[in-house]
Amino acid sequence: MRKYRVLIDSKDEKGLVYKISKVFFENDMNIEKNDEYVDKENNKFFNRSEVTGHIEADELEKKLKEALPKANIKVIVPKKKKVVLMATKESHVLGDILIRHYDGELPIEIVAVVSNYDFLRPLVEKFKIDYFHVSHADMQRSEHEEKILSLLEMFGPIDYIVLAKYMRILTPDFVQKYENRIINIHHSFLPAFIGANPYKQAYDRGVKIIGATAHFVNNNLDEGPIIDQDVIRVDHTYSWQEMRKAGRDIEKTVLARALRLAVEDRIFVYANKTVIF
Image 1 (cartoon, one colour):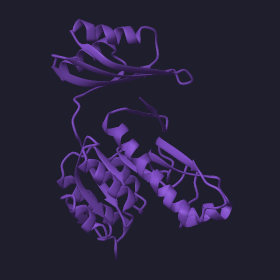
Image 2: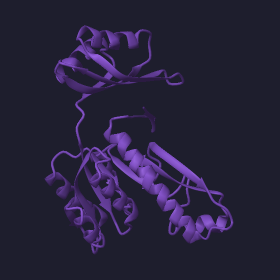
Image 3: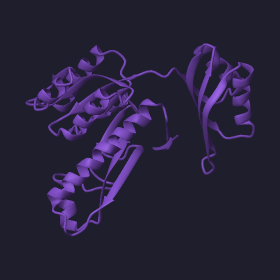
Image 4: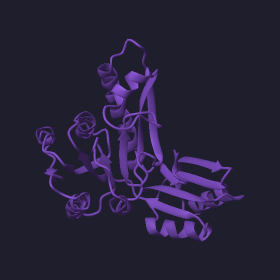
């Protein structure tokens, strides 16, 4: 018995669910889970199904495309996704993902950790994961990224790159190579305080909520499609250091949730936003 995740998006029209279900029925497939959504404003239909059966993946995709010739269709065989983590100096979100991976909570294979500093090598190597230090010192941004891209190519196809507090802005060329496959965690409930020490800025402004946002990276700084967000309330009794501590806890959970959604093929990206099942 084979198991598939089927992702379909198209212009909305009558009978789409019937046509999809008919293909599954005629090929003796069982629908274990099904989610659908219609964006009425943009007349877009989205469907995610988990199905089992004996048909081959390419044959199932062919039959679905015959039934819905104008739709975007993916038939995915569930498996561990290959992930590269990129970090700088902060350890909290990187360590959290490493622990979740070690405990088997995330269906991923961490291929490597890449950092522009060597600070986090001892932490990563405790988990028996390869650590690559690619320094940016005395180097143009484009040259530094070329070195990283050459390194990434050595790992073969990569499903996702996770910026675990990687504190360098990626160029459009880098982003284009991994479009909608680079996940970043931002230290605020966007829109956000930018620049150095955002928690000190938040403290100085007397904010009442702090949070975190996980999003796909695009060419507009921190404006990519949002995957997950969360907040907690704070008050005047919090120092900026206490805000930072609380914020880091949110960053860990939000990034982990976003990564899980991605590797379980639950995200549709369109119009710089997401539909998530």
